[in-house]
Image (cartoon, rainbow, N blue to C red):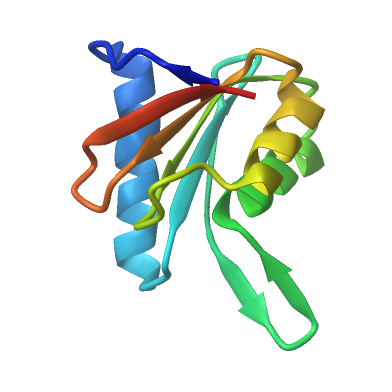
Length: 117
């Protein structure tokens, strides 16, 4: 469900900025960042290989889980897409639980929506 657009707290703005920078640095279609239950952040770009395709959010959540994260506080994705990817919502819910926010931002870093996974 789409949440109201409100002013972001600094920690949420940080993960949007990180997602935007990984996207630009790696020249990928989308970038993502997640914040785990301890406040650590993980960033990733979309992965497109002949044998493996991951959204940026999937890749960032995989990094967090591989590093030992047991939960998520929030996730952000910078993309041209106008709506959140259902796969992204599912993977955020898998590690973060129901109600974990996914922040969807445009390429300029402006928040488009906040969706509870």
